[in-house]
Length: 266
Image 1 (tube, rainbow, N blue to C red):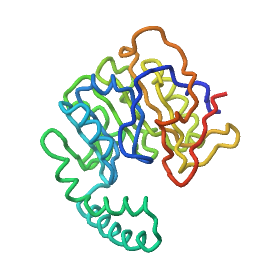
Image 2 (image 1 turned 90 degrees about the vertical axis):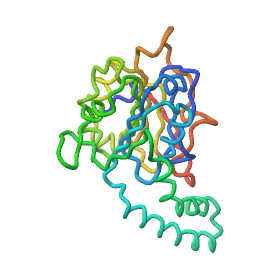
Image 3 (image 1 turned 90 degrees about the horizontal axis):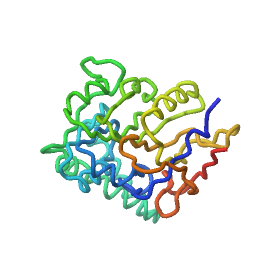
Image 4 (image 1 turned 60 degrees about the horizontal axis):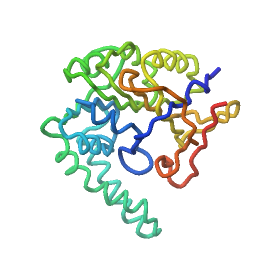
């Protein structure tokens, strides 16, 4: 069974959207961003808009990104597909997807202009053990050598294998934005992870990914993006949020052509 009631966020007043429109953007408290000294980003694929926004708002922060699927060859393939997309979208008058394809042909230059100085991309898989191609969260924290870390995680189901490194964080990790996939199929692991995280963090935002399906029993999406804030960072009396989710003028559907999922925590 899923413990949906535990996913209801607390009330915070400074939520902002970080990252691009639709899929790739996350909602986090601005105060947490400004207190961060570094960003650990697990899973970027072909979109580092979140990391760019984060660095723009907090330019002194170190940024370490981990994604073993992002290679120079994959960027070339993506550029070619974007070029074909421009032709097709121009013929079909699909303006929004045309803009996406136009941005896609610039991805190689964008990659090399962004990943430099104190911003790194490591071609490692984030996993539960260290080897030549894989690295644990504990090892990435050691490598970035910082406190006040913010973590963004979208690793397509591997989150259930790696979370053992994050419990009892002290002030080393002050916030996280995590996409949990297939929570119905992974309900036991999901509940255990959430229960452990909530010993040290508050949920400050949640959004359902409308690329995923609705779980009929709960009328709740099976893939959710959850933002956590370290309890040490939240001052004053804690009260539960009374907002409707998704939050108007802040949340956006991941799939822009489909209506966003309304969340019910009962």
